[in-house]
Length: 541
Image 1 (cartoon, rainbow, N blue to C red):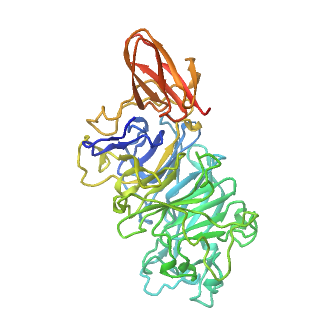
Image 2 (image 1 turned 180 degrees about the vertical axis):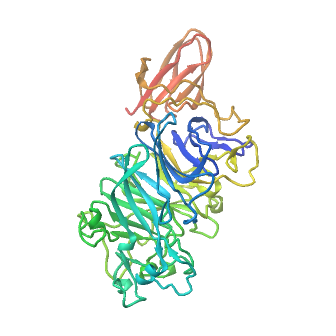
Image 3 (image 1 turned 90 degrees about the vertical axis):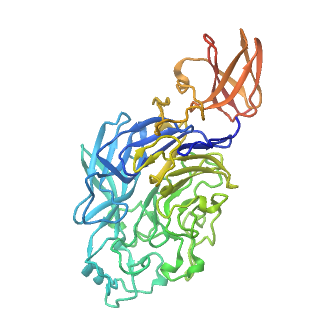
């Protein structure tokens, strides 16, 4: 297969080449309520339609194709918490779009926002604003002089166990309000030297000026079951935090307990040491960051980046974004290392993914990154409504623009006047167990008047190996022997239904080269009436 660049395509699939990673892409465009799953050719393979809501903001695919999405009623959001990312509702849907559970966290005193995380036990973690009065903030050492607001919105993280059709049991929770320090009010119980307490959060650390009730704006939550830890992105402080989930709720409110022995205090933080008085502007690494995640799911356990942290660094330059990977330092027991009087390490990132022309990738807000099995990274540039696979050398291996204007599908060829925002995007491998047993045949495109010839698919080649058809095993680099009665053309189609090669077959025996293909399952599809497809698996020798 040669590189393909659709010069006439302005939306949907823009570019793909042999160095892309096949699979599916899950995303939830803004200004409408439907969640989409497309294949590597940009064809729609499934959706979860909704016409009465808008994103609130994230979406996750669970076991058996179950979907967890957050949403806001189209008629409006929570009037008490009006900052960006307002979420309100969590909803579980079956693959067939049946609503299984619908729970609301939205009132005058709290509001779910931005992100949720599905846990292996079926529970979920949610980010929730909780209201504090200006008096409560003052009592906790906040300098409220000139503040101008009557409330402050710190966050809590709650673990929810779904109950019935719309209820939930809070099985665990953590409040940043329990882990504060400040050097403004000597009469407050949490008064101390900020630089001596990096495990605590300075209540007077602010984004720009002391004029925003949305103090921290935590915008992502990730869970590591092996560590039993939670990773948070805190963009208004330009940091990421790690906290212990092995605690009880009581321990999470204090400073002891859990696997770490440190209760709910911060185990690790990185990105902006000036926030805890251990650095200045030159020591800063993160700029309004989003989507902090541990690298690992879907990768070979031996991948050198597994266990590291990835983050979408939105404003790393004045007009460009990047996806960064860094390694938190740990000791022999797996505890995060810290030298008192210094900043948390590392001194610098390990890897940065960005476009060859840096301003091509720029999302001042929203966005995500995901390491792929071949070393590429899927970058979702949220404000651009753009998903792109970036190689380490900045080459673009795959590119897709959400084909919508103001949440409405547009014709192929439309020059968008504004992009439809996506909060994040997720790559899902063709053999991901969450998709097992689901029909993933292409059913069209999101865009209208699509360019159907750009990336040719053969409908009906995505059945699982248990369908009874013979499977020929071919060693990687060997040739596939095929015998046909007459001359004909044939397509080689991969497991996602994408055409990766075209072959000219002659009457009699043919030996087809496979060296240009990656290990995986393929189908040779003869373009002749009556000829039967041949399925073959290319394996490592």
